[in-house]
Image (cartoon, rainbow, N blue to C red; front, side, top):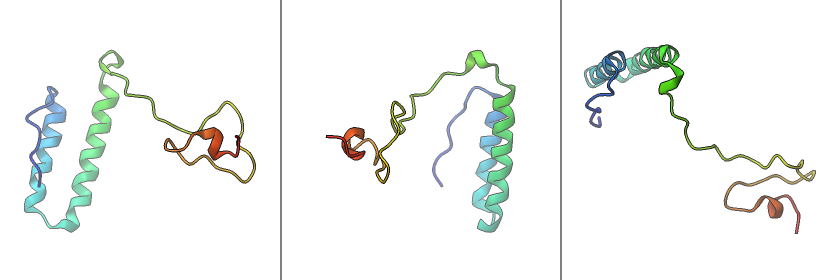
Amino acid sequence: MSELPEGTGDEGVDAIVAGLGRLGEMPVAEHVTVFGEAFSGLEAALERAPLEQATPGPPVPGPPTSRPPTPGRTWHGPGEPPEQAMGHP
């Protein structure tokens, strides 16, 4: 298992992350339960966190929304320009 971070600065979150350290002592079949508990705890911590502390991440790329795609054509992602992917010269 990889090393766990030293700390997040939030005692509740740090306790949840530290709890993941017990995975090495448990059968793999029980890991799902431990990850589920950690996920639920982290979600609850996020809900309690004030929005002022949140920092926005980078925008998530997606298909262009300025015009509908040409029927029968799909946008293939960032490696291909949307106009070419949709059949536009």
